[in-house]
Amino acid sequence: MSDMIRTAAFDGLAERYDAQFTATALGTVLRKMSWRRFERAFAGREYLLDIGCGTGEDAIHFAKLGHRVVATDASLQMVRMATRKAELAGCARDIQFVWSPMERLGAELAGENFDGVYSNFGAINCAPDLAALAREIAPLLRPGAPLAWVVMGRYVPWEWAWYLAQGDAHTAFRRLRRGGVAWRGMQVSYPTPETLARVMQPHFVPRTVTPLGLLLPGSYAAPLFERMPRVLAVLAHAEQSLQRLHVGGVFADHYCFEARRQFL
Ligand SMILES: C[S@@+](CC[C@H](N)C(=O)[O-])C[C@H]1O[C@@H](n2cnc3c(N)ncnc32)[C@H](O)[C@@H]1O
Image (cartoon, rainbow, N blue to C red; front, side, top):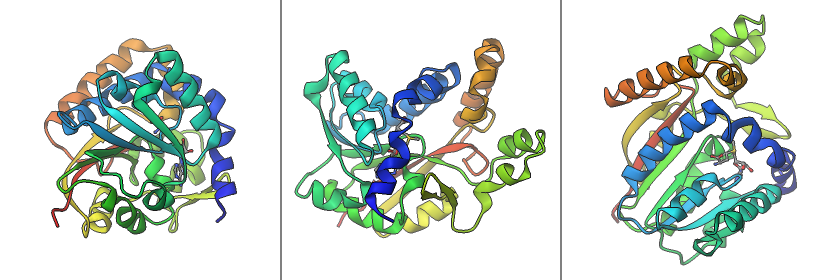
């Protein structure tokens, strides 16, 4: 698949992505949960790589916390949007934006020595080949460097119920399709935490998996929660309790997969 197609897939979403997800009540709650995981993983680590940075929300957050970030994305419009936001937030100096597909980062960032790598809200699901991606980015990281990726899960009862209630079995079970789902000219895949751990393992040591949307639904339900802030608060509280119980992420809309770069 050509890079042009992959880039175009998200270009058309860049302008409205924050309004439809980032700035919603549900999006805000979910992102704060992901930041708690990331902040714990990257405490004391200065130089971070962001894969599929989108509109730059995470890169800006980490720059404000004192990290230096190289934020990368395959969509030029996303990179432009993120650059604008970083300038407005006064932290453009601490973020280097790189327009590049993740499968080319090895060449694009050759010689870099990152202290950690994160990727939020499904960018990793767009990777054409997860094993190749692990191989590509491993040399960019210091031995022992933490990796934290928020990935869309495969088995999502919330989503099954949501779309089945609307009589849409096709969408309800789309994540189970073998070979992934065709979307805007690209393939999106939904690995289980177990599959992801397996393909990463030659280069990374898996550590934890945390659900992010086990009780909370996915972004399709965001408009609903704008009208029901109390229900959102109750679900978010319950979700955090489950996270503390280490229930795993097999049935979550997203899960946070954490690992460490292998020592050589
Ligand atoms: C759902 S958005 C998530 C954006 C951001 N990480 C966030 O948390 O809001 C997925 C992002 O992955 C990017 N993406 C998709 N395929 C990519 C690829 N092959 N290489 C790099 N970025 C890619 C898209 O352009 C998009 O910005």
